[in-house]
Length: 169
Image (cartoon, rainbow, N blue to C red; front, side):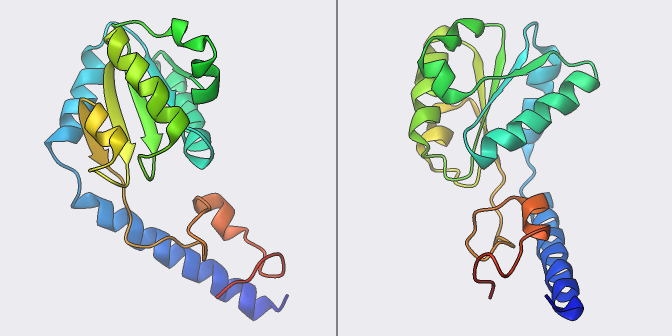
């Protein structure tokens, strides 16, 4: 790969990511402060769930929370569907992550978490999605455009996207 092309692609990715982060500032509202307050006042743990790339981001959120003293754990939605929902109590706060808000496995366990009585917070790019409608609080994390040409990869992967592996615009 030519050095000029790799530098151009890396700069383009960083510009798009910067635009996306800046675009989220205007989306912060009272739901964000309510979510922070809910987590702060909770007598339980923060249980983060998501599948695919959202799940990987969720695991990073858990790692950050635990390193700063917040009791948190990751619950994989499929494992939750097969018995691991027993870890969730009504004192917990469940943070459910899905860009589309229509992930079947995630929405299946969200319905069960609702019955348990835990507080549900959605991080989603679609505030009218099934996930958003099922949660107590919704934080809009939708971006205008993805840096990945296919809209699939989160930021670190985008930066290392190799143009010879798949078509790059």
